[in-house]
Figure (cartoon, helix red, strand yellow):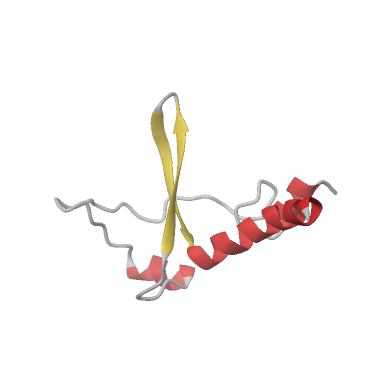
Length: 91
C-alpha cells in the first residue's frame, strides 16, 4: 500500500471512502461576514461551542471554487498521518 493511500485510509474525505458529499443546507453571510451552521449539522458533526475549525479552500483558474471546514483535531491527525513517516525518514 502506498504512503499516500495509507495516510488517506482513515480520513473521512478519502477518495475511496464510502461516504458522500452533499448539500446539507444553504446559509447566508451577514454584513459582518458571519454565518450560522444549522443546529442539526453541528450535532451530526459533533461541533460544540468553543470548537476550533480550520477553513480550507480549493482554487481553480485563480478563483476559489470550494470552501470546507475541518475540525482542528481531525486536521492534526491528518497532518500527523502524512508527515509522521516523512519525519521518521529524516531523523
